[in-house]
Image (cartoon, rainbow, N blue to C red; front, side):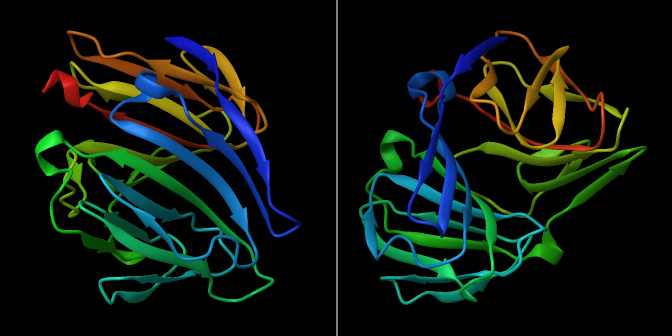
Length: 242
């Protein structure tokens, strides 16, 4: 495990604040993650290409996100839901809170596309909150919007094979999360304090634990030492290793 100081705080007026992660090859195939709170329109319609832009709303969001893109997609991303925009050769999209003044608590995740898929036709993937699989263990709840955990797999079939787990821990609870060989993994605290392989991280920290790809499978131990905690765990194989 490496501990990196890679998160930066970002504010846009009083209606948008975020922790922004950009860590280069250390988190490949992920390009970046924004952990954000948004209560008003912030980003006008803007283009993406050569990657996927993924919006995941936490259950505690006060409202959803109105989504629009240049393909003609118009939909409401409700709390707990996910919208995966595969930009491919190029797409324009815009997202803003469905109700101004209410706060959206979300992640914006940027995922690289394999070289042979960077110029594909753009397309969306939509996963409603009620369709996100949930694994319930003593003191632990794991939502599986992307990838798999404990034999439970998301129905989403993204163009880049990655895992995103939304993990809630009651005070004192522990969880071992397996990571496959040749996968990078990292953990982002969302609220509370979580111990990751014995090292404590809080959601206000600018530090993150990152696990470079290994040649053998391993596991990451999560623990909530005081009070409940929530983390997101991300895993995927760097595309150069495929």
